[in-house]
Amino acid sequence: EDQVTQSPEALRLQEGESSSLNCSYTVSGLRGLFWYRQDPGKGPEFLFTLYSAGEEKEKERLKATLTKKESFLHITAPKPEDSATYLCAVLLYSSASKIIFGSGTRLSIRP
Amino acid sequence: GAVVSQHPSWVICKSGTSVKIECRSLDFQATTMFWYRQFPKQSLMLMATSNEGSKATYEQGVEKDKFLINHASLTLSTLTVTSAHPEDSSFYICSAPGPWGYTFGSGTRLTVV
Image (cartoon, chains in turn yellow, blue):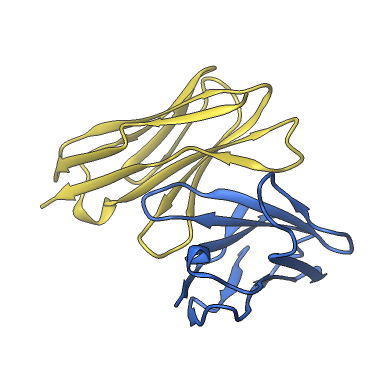
């Protein structure tokens, strides 16, 4: 069965304290992996798409990386406004365009 | 670009009534729209996939007679929650594959009282 697991479930950091969020996947035929940010009461906001192992993408304080088994979202020197739930999702070759979401990591940055 | 507009953002309805949620793709054509449901502190669960001009495909365990989906045009998909009950209270979100990836609506908070 195709599975996407995110860890940790919740993470509290001090402002400026860098860390990483993990998304591990066990799927048959990865076509792409997405990272989204979701604020309370809002829809997910697109951050990155990764397609192949070794690929990296950056945006401001965020960098996403991909291996054959997992993806990391590195956050460098976070600010309170980075507090949100971060979701990863995978698109499979077999899924007819459906994407499978992980359960998310709730990130809280203390000033 | 690639915006999906979802309305209403929140709605309160009485038990037994029906509620319609609309999602419009504003600057691209969405031949497919995905409908998700999200409970507090949980991830998005796919309910159904709508395709313009054909019947929606529902995920296992989702009642198609309760959650009516219509994809009337290349820019509009609607979800109607029929005979709503308190257990249908949730956050409903639509998403469409766009030119730059999957774009999500802003979500609809449904509360059934």
